[in-house]
Image (cartoon, rainbow, N blue to C red; front, side):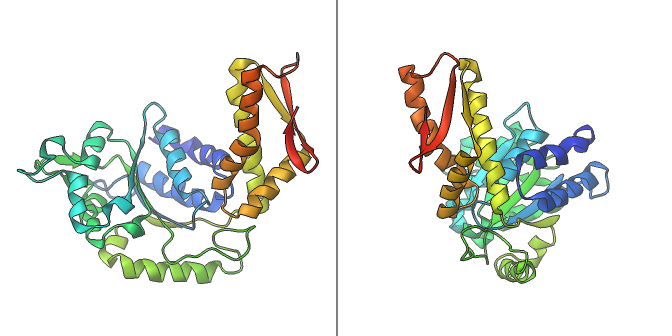
Amino acid sequence: MIAGMAKLEENLKTKIIGQNEAIGEIVNALKRSAAGLTGDQRPLGSFIFAGPSGVGKTYAAKILAETMNPKNDGLIRLDMSEYGEKFNASKIIGAPAGYVGYDEGGVLTEKVKRNPYAVILLDEIEKAHADIFNLWLSVLEDGQLSDSHGRTINFKNTVIIMTTNIGLKRKGEKKQLGFGSGEKGTEQNNFKDSLEEFLRPEFLNRVDKIVIFNDLKEKDLEKITIMGLNEINGKLADRQLKVAWDNKVIKKLLKKCLERGEGARVVREILQLEIENPLADKIIKGDFNKSRVIKIKVKNNRIALT
């Protein structure tokens, strides 16, 4: 792990736009763990990622998993809305003896047993029953969890990430999502107060870092849009095709994203609708010139491919 720490921050900042401060906090915590400056028994890192939808919380967990564990599917994701009832805890560690599903083991414990270096994402923790988090106390403190068969599963090499938007609400401005520079202190305090009402102090005290994801500004969404177009070219490379665009196209796509006001997530939807769908039609029909360059332009205030 130590060998990969040097480039971890650079790799994350290249792919996760507009969250340099958050990335720095994550990487610093992981570096302390890699250097042996934290408890030997605890997971490599445990974090709560806070912020509204569309600012990169879940994506950051995905990229972290890919960066730290590039040869395997390193992300284990649990949708915490599926754990809204107390009895749902059995899904995590497995059904008790005599119940249906006992032989299958737990959703989480079986996956960690197969991939002990995973990044574990607990998505939208505010949707889970509060008692579900009792299971995690031993994981966060001792780096282990016993399944329904009595087997002890080692979590010491995992990274645990919990996402939440508890205590947060979208701002009125569609151009900005998350914690604004002028309101950041107030928003953070509101978040922490709400989190303390939901999670017990003994749980919060075991989390390494609460990471605040800041607002995505217009320049951030512009970078994400350009990255998306470059990714399309990457997909076209095997066909020896390429798309080309000018700044007017970027501005038009960006305007559509800002009108929706849903952060980075909407960029992918806009690119699929405005670029990939008509592009797929042209490719299937063989409708491209000898240069095999498909130009994206703004015509009559609309995106057009020629």
